[in-house]
Length: 294
Image (cartoon, rainbow, N blue to C red; front, side, top):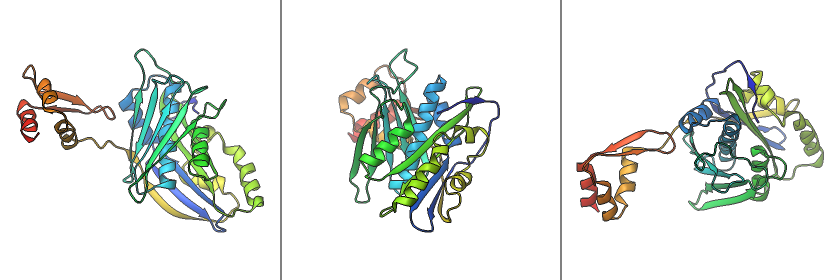
């Protein structure tokens, strides 16, 4: 969710992790402002609705990775009511996260109301790939609700998630969120207390707008009156993993005839990274060397 105000806040992005001293709850809270800004600038999100959905997807993906596979890569793919419209959040254990918006020509929005689907793929410790697919809960139109459904159905973990961003004059002023996980053998009493408490924080945009949603403040709010210990603090940032070497490897994997077709006209080949919009140029000599290696 997003709204518009006037003040722009600048933050260094990070994720805080805490656990209550009684072992009942694990909480993660994050500031993703700069990460979201970088991804949105690269993808040129043109409308507030598209911006808020993309921002929430990036933040939710970071929280899920930090919770379930902090040392491995995670991708979250959100498909809208139009099956040709989708977004991708790609987040890595070094803290770098990037995103992609793919819309049909002349389409500027991606409604989630009826046919929205969230797919999450993450690498396990043994190198295998775990994937889960859930529908965006009916009537929610909410990325937070989609990630909660994923955690419940695919990870079998009861989780409460709230992500959001605050816009100022159409620009991202603040973005972040929190995740509360109920640990095994939780007694019914603490669960009811936490569920009731978090009703006040299902929409965190007002806190973001007031500058009261740093990770430390979100921990303090969600765990008010409950002794807890902070057990982790990780930096996150917008970052792309493209490089000339990676692109050269991709080109080298093409059939010889395809590489030769790219050389027609005798001009250098220009390639733009879909994620960060950085441009790379391959000379005719470099393309010939790929053919020789092929």
